[in-house]
Length: 288
Image 1 (cartoon, rainbow, N blue to C red):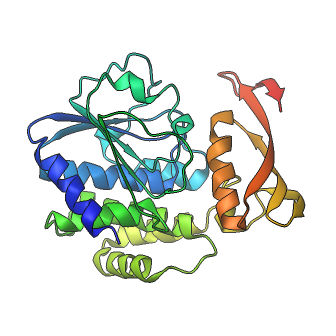
Image 2: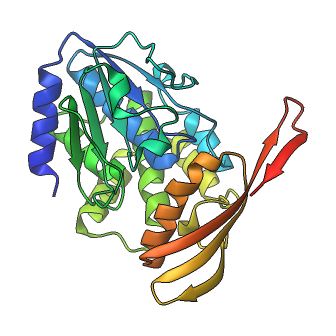
C-alpha cells in the first residue's frame, strides 16, 4: 500500500504552500502519465500551489492524443527540457518516472538544488536517483494513477460532477486500464476502478470513454496484445524483440522495460526502426 508514502508526499506539499511548481511529463506521455500529471495538479491546487506542466514530444498514439485534450490547459506546454532549466518554479514534480532517459535532457544536476519530487510505480528501476534535493516515492502499483488517487484521497478531496473532476476520473480510468492490459486488477486497483465507475457520471465523457476503447490499438503498448511488437526468439527469460517503426528513439528503453515486465523477462535485445519526418510529413531519415 501507499499510505505511508502518501502522507509523506502531502507533508512535503504542505510545506510548499504559496510556491510555484512545474509538473514534468515524460517524453511522448502515455495515458498513465497524463492521468498522473492531472491528479498531481489537483493535489497541488488543494494546497494553493500554482502549477504548470511541460512535456517533450506528442502522445504516441490516437487514444492518447484524444486524452491529451482532456488534461488541464496549464499542463499542455510543449517544451524541450534544456540546461539550465528555464522554469520559474520553486520545485518540480516528475510523474510516472522510470528513468532519466524518459525526460529528454534532464539529469539530477540540472535542477540547481531545487526540490524534485518523483512519484512512480517502477521500484526496480536501475537508473540512479541521486541528489539531496530529490525525494522519490515509489510503490509497485499496477498503474501510477492508483498511487496518485491514493494521495489525492488523503487530502480529503471529493470528486463532484464538475467538468474538471470528471475529466480527471476519465484520465485515471484510461491510465489504469492501459497499464493493466491483459492482467487482472489486484485488490487495490479493483477498488480504485470501482470508485471511478461510481463517480464518473458525465454522460458525454462516458460516451467518449467507450469511443476511446474502440480506437485502433497503439503500436508500442504491448498490454493490448494486438501484436504491436514481435518476438524474434525467446530463450527462457531472454528474448529478442522488435518494435517496428517509431518516431522517437528515446521511448525505446521505456517500452523495452514494459515489455520485459509483461513478458516476465530478465534480459532482452530490442530492435526498432527510428524515422524522422519534415514539416510536410515526408520521410527524411530512417535508421536502426
